Image (cartoon, rainbow, N blue to C red; front, side, top):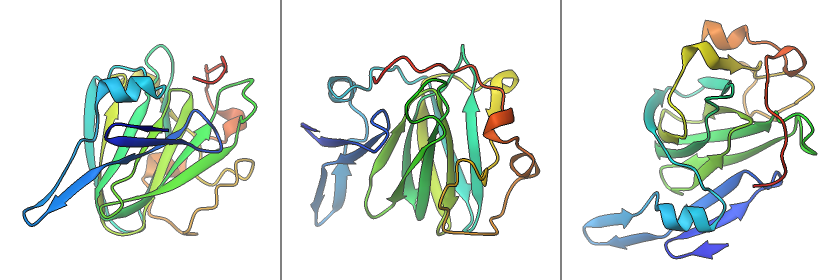
Amino acid sequence: MSGGNFTFRRLEIPDVILIEPKVFFDNRGFFMEFYKATEFEMNGIKYKFVQDNHSYSKKGVLRGLHYQLNPKAQGKLVRCIRGKILDVAVDIRKGSPWYGKWVAAELSEENKLMLWIPPGFAHGFVALEDSEIIYKCTAEYDPALDRGILWNDPEIAIDWPISDPILSAKDANLPLLKDADNNFVYEGES
């Protein structure tokens, strides 16, 4: 759905939305909005953002799959501002018709696409080049509620474009989805 300066496209899991901003180029460079509350709300993203994060990852780094439990579950609006990543969302809402399924989008400095990942999803990405991402979160980080799922869980079977990623020790030892601490319940599409 288009709205003003953005095009919103629901992916195969309809609660995950790929957002294309309208970019205005001229001889000085470019200008774009990357968030506008009214347009996002009209397209089903009715959350208040309370924290912004910025990370750098070398080519081959895989981060995830991360999520934060209720009552401080995080929705994330992810944008790659340098380089290129494959950004992945896994539905972990119990009772969801898409439980354990994943969707992905390539986000890059060139395409300027953004991915909305709502609460109730595990999030991860692999850097296809040296990359910087920024993302807005709907809840502040709380280490006591920080959880994750192993990046290569065979039941989820994400088609990562890398077989031997660079992982943190924490991410290399995350549980499988079937063993993960998870308090999300599907309540219908947003």
